[in-house]
Length: 341
Image 1: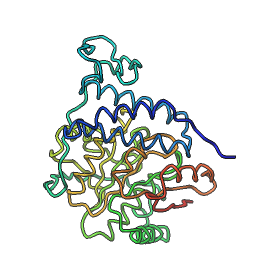
Image 2: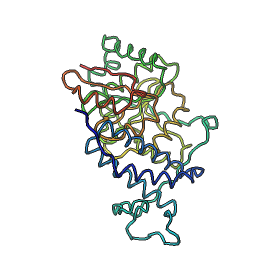
Image 3: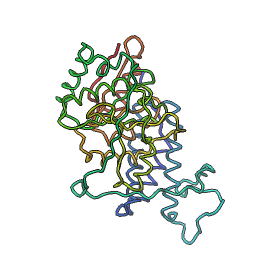
Image 4: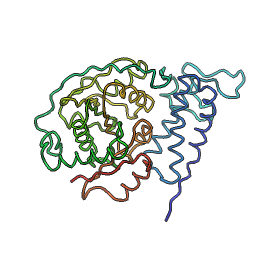
């Protein structure tokens, strides 16, 4: 039996925001918000064929409210004549819809965002590399570290070869339908195998603020939390980035598991980060993302990666959920699947 989902109000709200932002597309800050609104609108359109979980719907509502607050703070309300905008401690109102924003967003101000014009004009990205010592007691599942001459390690080398035949993508997202389905293990091993075949360096990025696991899995403390770097570089995109060298020519930008994390990944800041890190001398960038069915993060950053590899665990992963996750990603960005034992 087919299921349908009435997206209803959110898509109309985003249409109104897009209509307001489109005439201001020459303004870099407005254009960044316009990109975000269109990305959200595209995701909601996909909900008609792939109904999202309740958690994702609630998260989307929060993102739309945040976006509306930023738009209202930047642009005058539409067709409001000389009506003054609210200020001080007054509640913020979404002028395009009339709904009140949460109190925490009432006084929010969008960060200034620098958008560059054309990759040709971008300078080489400055990079600070700090060697770190990974744990000696790594999981045996990290075959590329623990037993690089094993059959399991050779399987990751074969995966590297198969990915190269799919157009040789340079920025590869690694995800899974849900939690505890091996995506971080896959991301780390894939990054290490790509390093073997690369002429230059490989970067492993962690983009899962809800449940960061890269630093804990490898047993090191990130010199600078990746989320903190996102916040800094959204305002100052030409500042140096900091990467941990976990083995020669393999760098990692991980989330510090000790810090209290913001639950939502900023897709605009992430897009700026990937654009700059492509110019930091890396042959490949592997991104360990959130699970597909537990948040909207993967879809929000899909424009920044060249494709996704999805992990599943033998006798644990659910086939129906796996198919839903693949449908949610879209066949255009799906590179393949890996079954882990």
